Structures are given as structure tokens and as C-alpha cells.
Image (cartoon, rainbow, N blue to C red; front, side, top):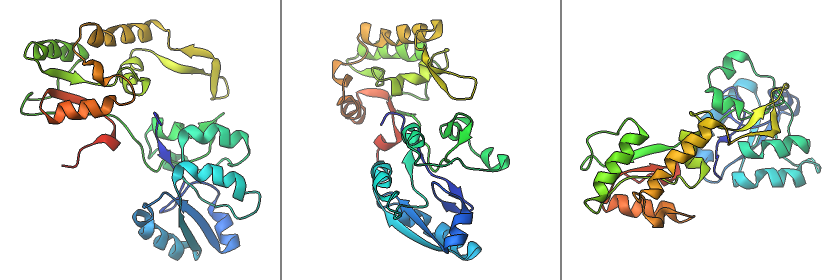
Length: 264
């Protein structure tokens, strides 16, 4: 999942995903689906929520990527959850299928989140979820090879050329996948879909060929054309190649997702 922003609705102190606390009061209990091996992280929130609202919380672990599919089956039977966790890129289909209801959340609480994270759960100006966790890219660098991160892609390209003269590498990144190259494309004026008048997206207007987007991709291609990237980092196994070169001190820096961070 290349835009893996995980999310759920937060009801007071309880990390959650859908429906309002009024339903919990009416039923006297709240059924919550949490990701596998993640329920320990919200036990205190669950306890606080139960005390504050005098509601029993039934917590069940389930792989978050499968929760929406199970909701399609369990919801009509009346045994689905009140609260679930879904990736934001599953939101559109869930809303169209009538599986989620819009939320009413105070603006002050919405303002506590970054615009990118909260807007990932909007559709046609309606809010359907609140972020629970947000994933982003980080640059890991080897202090034995470079004192501090460089301040521009041009500087990294120049450094990488110097490293290649010593049979080493400078920056290594998965620029062949848009998830990793978006840090250059987006700031230079690229976008996936334009917004429409209702706050949603217009799939008929794609912004990957704007002058800024073309300029960004043209520059990123230099890392390949000037052979400062090894061929082995292309494709699905590229991250493993980057890790291997980095840990063997053949690379000064690597662009990584949080899931790929080393245990240090």
C-alpha cells in the first residue's frame, strides 16, 4: 500500500473508527475492531472511555486491511463493529457502498491534526474518519560517511557522483515508484487529481503532466541516466537492495518508509 495512512475515529480518548458515541450509550456497549497485536496500545483509552461513558467496550483484534471486507459481510447481519480501523485509500469504496456514515467533529478537534492527515478522510466535504497513525518517508544517513543531510536533490546528485568515483553510492531512493518520488513531484506543482467544486476530486483532470511535475521527474531521471543508482534498486525488491548497500556502508543515505526502519 503506497499511501498507507492508517486511520480511525477517536471517540474522546478511545482510538476508534466509525459511528457516534450516542450509539454506545443507547446500546450500553461498543464493539471495536483493532489491528492484530495492536489492542494493547489502546487498553488505557478503552478503560477511560468505559468509565467516562459507562459503556462496555468489546475489543476484537483483526487485520486492519481485512476489516472493511468483513464489515461488508457482518454489517447487514447486525454483528459488525461500531468502530473499525481502515486505510484511507479504502474510504471511497466504503462510502459509495454505504458502509460508513459522515462524522460530526468539532473544528477544534479537527485542527489538532495535520491538514494532509485529516483531509485523507474527507469525501465531498464530508468527514468519515479521524487519523490514528500517519506514515511518512524519512531519510536515514550514515554519519561515518556524511556529516549531515544535504539540503537539495542537486547536492545529493553531486555527492552521489563523487561517491561513484570511489565505487560507493550517495543517495539511494525508490524514485521509480511514485510513493517515493512524490516528495519532489508534489512540491514542484504536480498533483494526482484536481479538486472539484464540492471538495472532492475530479478524475478527469490529472496533474502529472504539469510543467512542475515534468521538471521534477526529468530531474529524478538523472539519478538513473548518470548511473549513480545501481540497477538492483529498481522494481519490487529495490528496498532490500538499498538496505543491503546502506548497512555495508556502500551508501551515504537511503530514502525509507517507517516500516523499513532498522532496529537501533
